[in-house]
Image 1 (spheres, rainbow, N blue to C red):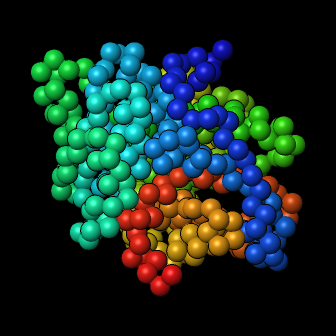
Image 2: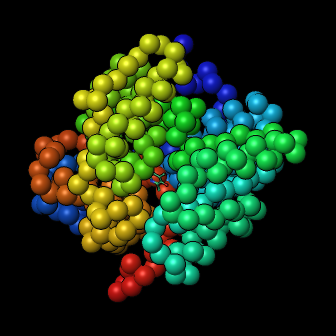
Image 3: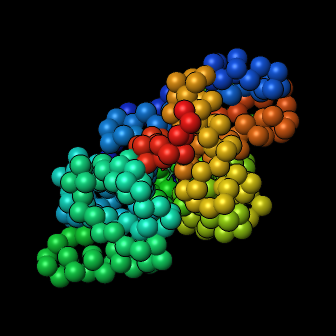
Length: 339
Ligand SMILES: *Cc1c(COP(=O)(O)O)cnc(C)c1O
């Protein structure tokens, strides 16, 4: 069967993660909801490490690293990368050494940003961290470090930014089936599955998985929070097609099938917007749920904007994937200073 399930996988999450209606938020929004039914998929409810979407990718990435006999994994990210933190946690749990090349891409030097949140947890999980200036080619630095370690006899596997290699994207290709099966069991037909788009692997995996299941890949829709729109579409499409190549069924997506919204990124990656703050507060105060300030907060702001402006018809059911990133909130305390 042409299925992500035939690839080696190290179970890291308690799957399936639940899908829940947003009853409190819906009550709060009242008429502004226009009869749209809102649901969340709780990929923030991971079993360990602080949780988040990267664990789905790491299930396949760590299995691949193990199959190649790796004793060390290296990955890259911004200083407050959730992916780096979860790689450190998952490596610790798997008995692998972990090194992180973290770049100072976000222009902040305060103690919350440089020492709290994910950065604090990376060290707690025992990862060796190499901090580099923002303009560093982190993947090249990671490869150079890998060569050094290999020369010393170590087995090293390098994960790209966000874990979004074709192997990593299998996590969300598999999640597409998980969501459709849950929707069937709940007797709900989702008209959109919404995610934040950083490295693009989550959207790419979902789009690839949906098309393999004979569904419209535009059922998945993302809000870019990292790259400008054109670039986000191009990299997401590349990753989706590379995932389809790995699955080996001859599937192919076109640019028109990759639905990305570029209107909610704000001035740049990791820079707060008022709409993000409103979204984070609203979810906290109406549901007790935590969005993160860099990814899911901006994406949920996009969802709120789209619902309020009438993008969805009354009765439509929309699913937002909660992708975690909660430790990032502690690096963004100053953005919520008035609370
Ligand atoms: C990485 C991340 C995303 C985006 O996933 P990509 O696959 O990189 O696009 C969304 N939300 C959170 C909290 C993340 O850490």
